Amino acid sequence: MKYDFIIIGAGIVGLSTAWQLKKRIGQADVLLLEKEDSPAFHQTGHNSGVIHAGVYYEPGSLKARFCKAGARATYAFCEEFGIPCERTGKLVVATDEIELQRMHSLFERCQKNGLDPVLLQDGELQELEPSITGKGAFLVRETGIVDFTAICREMLNQFQSLGGAAMLSTEVTDITEQPDGMIIRTRSETFRSNRLVVCGGLMADRLARMQGLDIDFRIIPYRGEYYRLRPGPEYLVKHLVYPVPDPELPFLGVHLTRMIDGSVTVGPNAVQGWKREGYGRFNFNWRDTAEVVSFPGFWKTTARHLGHGLHETLNSIWKRGYLAEVRKYCPQITARDLEPYPAGIRAQAVLRDGTMVHDFLVKQTPRSLHVCNAPSPAATSAIPIGRHLCDELLGD
Image 1 (tube, rainbow, N blue to C red):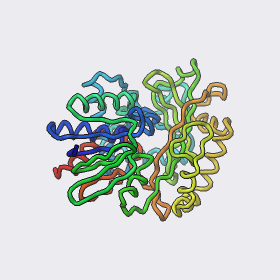
Image 2 (cartoon, rainbow, N blue to C red; image 1 turned 90 degrees about the vertical axis):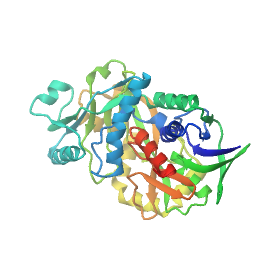
Image 3 (spheres, one colour; image 1 turned 45 degrees about the horizontal axis):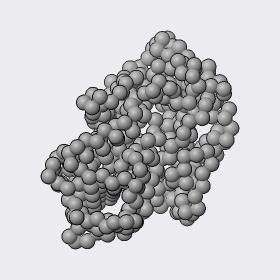
Image 4 (cartoon, one colour; image 1 turned 60 degrees about the vertical axis):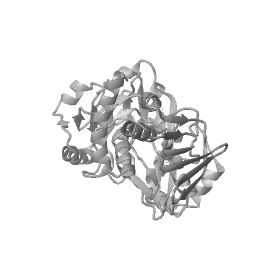
């Protein structure tokens, strides 16, 4: 059978695209392919569960635009389909004079991004969060929490109820573009379609190269390691609590996140990964590692952030170093409060010159769209990203 559209990848971006495509063109034959046996198996299912408001992103960037629209769309989706979510609000806390200066710049960026942050005056931080200390802070009310895996399950359900076809446990092994359509091969079957959308996440570069695209980036995996507060101390925070990030560094730093089940996670850090889909404590894959170390961009970006990378690696090994990061603004937490929690893997696109790609990156051919980089806040932004991809496919 030849399909009108095939979508590869049942993370939240792929599911959003498939669902919205089927909503727009009910008569279209749409097939979703996923190599795992369930949706949201990788990045979507291992993220922080935060509905981001758009605090950190460059005004006017796709990240900033998609995030604000995505937060509205995510809350609306949850309300429509009865998925629990909560607008907890986010506190951004400065712990020293340098962070205080950065905090005011970040506050202004929030305003440029169309948010309505509240700059807290003396004593107001302690009123909101008695366990949190800092030189200054501001509150972003729009931030919230949800289980994005639950959203994915509902998107898949809606897609299938509209007549969409989904095949799980189906790994793509070859992609060929021809003038009259796409040929997609799996281990057991061959499929044809008029158009193709690839939302490969951690495998985005491999799928692009599988089709023969000339790309100048590779996916470099970074592990985000978390702890969870043991039962009892989770009462310490009611909001999400974030440090003020260093603009010279690519990651936000360790923060406290209330989860929709009531637990509180601490993290993540950002350490080099040696296995793209390795979520255990010790992970290594020869192919993944060989691809990383043979790519010039890896060495250039590693050299650029060497000091910070070594610091993160040390804290990964030494629990008290990790603890010190969060005690800067929550000194009541002790080492015994930190329990193990599953890690996540960030699929970071890195260019050959060592530049990390921080915005969304889509490569297009006459009959295909490849989502090559979908960094945080991709989960929050999934509905407008899917809408954008549908627009590109349909020429709207």
